[in-house]
Amino acid sequence: MIFDPITVCNLDLQNRFVRSATQEFMAEEDGTPTGRLGDLYEELARNEVGLIITGYSYVLPGGQSDALQQGIYDDRFIEPYRKITERVHRYKSKIVLQVVHGGRQANISAEFPVPIAPSQVKNGHSSVVPREMTEEEILEMIEAFTKAAVRAKKAGFDGVQLHCAHGFLLSNFISPYTNTRADRWGGSVENRSRIITEIVRRIKEEAGPEFPIMVKLNATDGFRSGTAKAGLGLNAPECVEIAKLLEKAGVCAIEVSGGISEAGGVTIRTAINSPAKEAYFKNYSKMIKAAVGIPVILVGGIRSLSVMQCLIESGCADFISMSRSFISEPDLVPKLKSGKSSKARCVSCNLCFDPEGIRCNFEFD
Image (cartoon, rainbow, N blue to C red; front, side):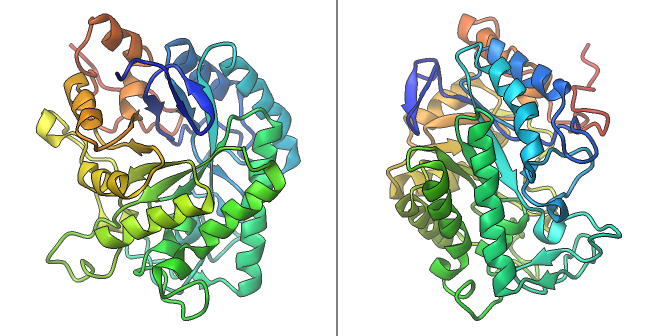
């Protein structure tokens, strides 16, 4: 089943494997995509990854949250990205551009000394207090995401994924912890989700109703029970309701993830050394999949073929998404398909997040 062709978001995929978005540290300082990114994505395509989701690409200059992060805030990026999509499309893989704004986790610089967010809630990880966005800024942000999607389409991408997870701007809006607004952008689940549903509406108007829009969704902020912030973040019933709103708006697939930086060690867990530790967001994805009719993609420490098959057969997910495993083994899919391997060799050490460019830096025997 996992190796069989399948259609999602009007895209014919060769299998159910997804390369989850990862910051690659391979763009120019201004966000221009490079040939190194093309090398990376083409290698994944050559090795039969059904759907490739790029590293997060920021939609406005002030939305950058990491060094050498790729951007999509200007038309000059269209041609460099087109060179990349053409390389991927030599093979059967599809490629989607993930778009983002850093929000309260954006970099601070002389030009952008204070990050923006839905509300003025101190970042417990960095101790930075963001500035609350005005109504006008929210509307401008919606247009920035829309223009980014149009650029992605012109560059040959097969769709976009809105990054609504991991403490970046769109996940700041959906979380009651980081969104304490009392206007139409805060309060109820519907209001907190409004910026996303409005982005989806505008993309459909400008890029066409058939252009695939996916979402990477925070199912939880990740605060541990018993801590002071445990009851302040996203909860399971709310993430299910948000998923329903996204489906109604026209999102065609949801990738389930979780965690923000100040919760610590939630998103990218280490020491995934047994099947029991794999797929650590599966309970959330199963609830969401039961509530929506669109495909659900699951990410989070998935390593073993047996676990992958079980996740699909048990109704936890429709697609298996991996990041670190593909950094360690770009050829993992053919290895699993041929029976050469039954699991990824990745030991979840996180040494691959190399500021000179992602790579597996673990020394295997």
